[in-house]
Image (tube, rainbow, N blue to C red; front, top):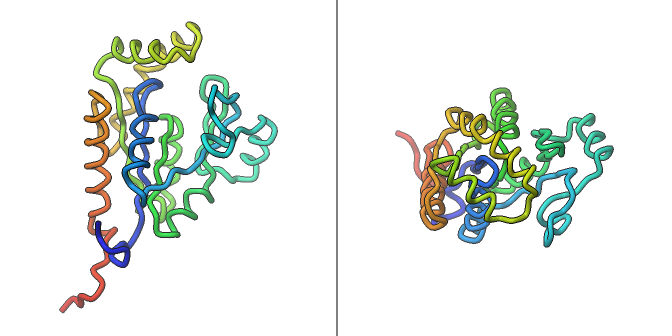
Length: 212
């Protein structure tokens, strides 16, 4: 691990996938493995799933409250997904980056597209951003994972499978593509990407050296 004084700017590591693609599992492991990597809690209007805690898994907001924050321009990104709104507060991301830590975003492809658009006009976000798309190799494998979760109705599973080809087509807009295999493989690949991004020249300050 490099000394903290060497770090020049943080990494905004964005991981996206089709629903059921494995990004939540990878993100949980990345946070456990990397103390400098912080999870930003996103907002949603959907109801909590069993075991989810408000303020820990998501900020669960009513639709009127979410829309009020949208109108106030508080979101870095927001999207309507399967009838529910999801969003990332701009202040949540920027505050962590400015504190010297890195940020991990677990986000859908709509949200990722919004953040890329913001990054085009925002030098601070653009300098920090690194995007990763994670996907199973086939639609059959994705269906198996979705059904294995057992947390959605048949209607929801069918809707997610229908949306998956368009979601996977978005992979061309990401910096990195990870074809999901096992949990251990996925974690190793994403970890290697994170470490490479932390070592990029514009993110490291060589304190104590003077260019002659």
